[in-house]
Length: 267
Image 1 (cartoon, one colour):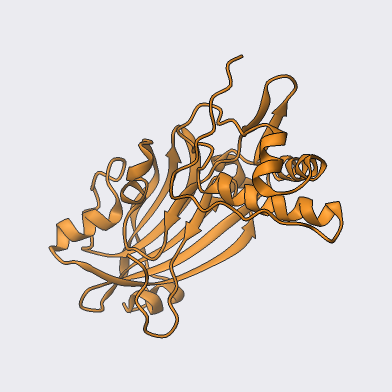
Image 2 (spheres, rainbow, N blue to C red):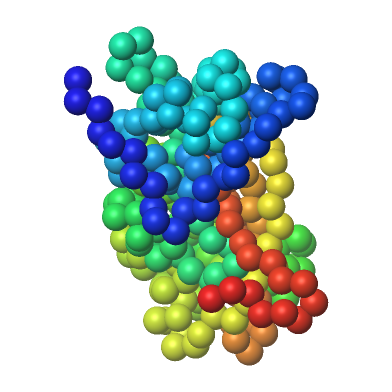
């Protein structure tokens, strides 16, 4: 088998070689964290790559400045996390590459993942008029029992389920018969209302998949999910879109940029 060369991006920061005064287990945990970061950053290939291959153990040991035994333990830790698989005689392959979706930008999934060159498929589970519960009414600032549009979609990337999205919208945000299979809700709102989205309140937490969600996302019941709550406002401050998104924890990382005080974030 011809081994594909490992060529990290030119601007990828190389970890400095490190001498460990502690135990091999300490070195293994540090190497695991560095390798996990590189895997999730797509250094060895992302979801679009065919069986991304890690460098041999001796190369990783030299690159990270730890012993080969520490690298072997680090790889076992990563295998336990489901990020890699080891094939005797073939090498170590990335199996848990994740998509990165930015949550500090108001953009739909297809917009966010455009650079991955992977198709986004939307399966519309429900799209119907409903009535606002007390919680939804308070968030959308409409009377309790007012009509709203309720949408539930299963979203897949590259043929693999990624998230289950439920959305409550003010009536008039988008047409009830809108083409939700091929378009993001955000772009539909801006097209229908001819108004720009403004800002959103976002909360992210970790939850376990219930049986129904697990079946739809093709994971085991109890598997970890990233649960995102997002209340999106138009540029005039009107709340229009209340979402709950359940992402597969093994398929997606949510990324944001933070700045201290009023310092601008990097471009």
